[in-house]
Amino acid sequence: HTTHPDAQWFTYAGLGLFLHWGISSVHGSIDVSWGMMADTPWDSDRANRNKVTPAEYFDLAERFDPERYDPSNWLRAAAEADFRYAVMTTRHHDGYAMWPSNYGSFGVKQYLGGRDLVKPFIEACRDAGLKVGIYYSAPDWYYHRKHMSFHYGSGGDPRFPGREHYGLRHELIDELPPEPEGFDEEYRAYVRGQIVELLT
Image 1 (cartoon, rainbow, N blue to C red):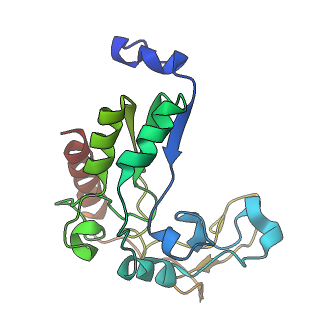
Image 2: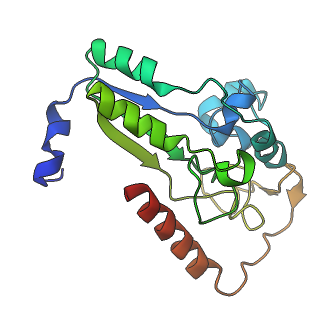
């Protein structure tokens, strides 16, 4: 629990709105990011019917175009319904940046001509008198897509012994390709750059 004075409002905030949204909404039947990860235990009863391959998931960016996106009306309605704050997913594990970031290569800058989806949300929250929250996921599966498995729990997780790695098309792969030299340092600089952009 933070003791920072600017954060104390949250303890008593009550009802908040969380906008868990991204390119997965184009599909309509998959979860944000997790829709590309095969065999997640929390929805095993669906037998991967609510999954797509990572390649298919990332291709959703081509069709993501929220043409009627105007958060002012529904955030004003949320405030009238006694919501006190709203949080927007600015980047989930899929790595799609919802603002025109100068860092990375996957987001509105590349696919929506630089149209910012975060700024209107923040402005609408402020106009409605709601506290603003932005959710930013540090993992980025797009950035790591060639060096990770898309089979949940593969690679030695004791809960799933012998579970094999899956690639971008959920094909079996024997081993993950090694990350090139400097990969992690570049990733840290990229994440830091995006967080600075969001905060400023």
